[in-house]
Every structure is written in C-alpha cells, then in structure tokens.
Length: 141
Image (cartoon, rainbow, N blue to C red):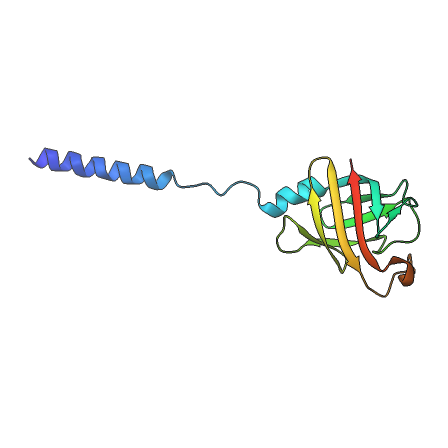
C-alpha cells in the first residue's frame, strides 16, 4: 500500500510539473513591434486628397524608421513637418502621430493610408490657409 501511495504521489507531482512547465509563452512580438515592422521603410504616394484630388504630390515619399520619419519629393506645401518623430496612439493598430499631428492609419505589407484633419499654425514648409482641412494620403511600397 505504501508503494501505491508513493507511486500516486510521484505521478501527481509529475503531472503538476508538466502542466506548470507548459504554460503559455508570451515570447511573440508585441502589437507595436508588428506595426512598426509593417511601417518601416520608404513609401511612395499613390494619391492625395484634401477634399479634392491633389496632383502636386507626384514623387512624394515618406520613410519610417523605428522612431522618426522623413519626407522627400512633392511640393513644399505639407500639412505636417518634413521630418520629425512619430509614435503610436491608442489603439496601436489604427492611431499614429507624426510629430504633434494625430492621424488614423491603415498599413499592410504594400499599402499605407494616413488620414487626418489639419487645423494648426503651419510649418516652415507650409502655408496654413492652404493646408487646413481633411487629408488622405495613400502610399505603396
């Protein structure tokens, strides 16, 4: 009887240790890491609208690194700075800020859409009266 009790205790201990050792792994990438990986790189504009289609953004690109963005090409007229830091808002999967400009975004491996309303004072690269309003930038890789 002592042997049976010993075997059952040992078996129960083995089962408990196995269950505890097989807990969930949280080693996967975070949402921020996943979204950052999708954003990083250079994006070329495919369309820009501010209530009407804009054709003066031909050749405009935006490049994202881990924590900054830079733009090139296109007109001097932009509703956000040419370069600055960027950060996610909440939720991470649809909210982003380029500098102080909050935006909603959608990103896949080959398409990025930024949409926002601009009502600020303007930047060295923009004239406020010409950039106020709702904007949608669509990019591809």
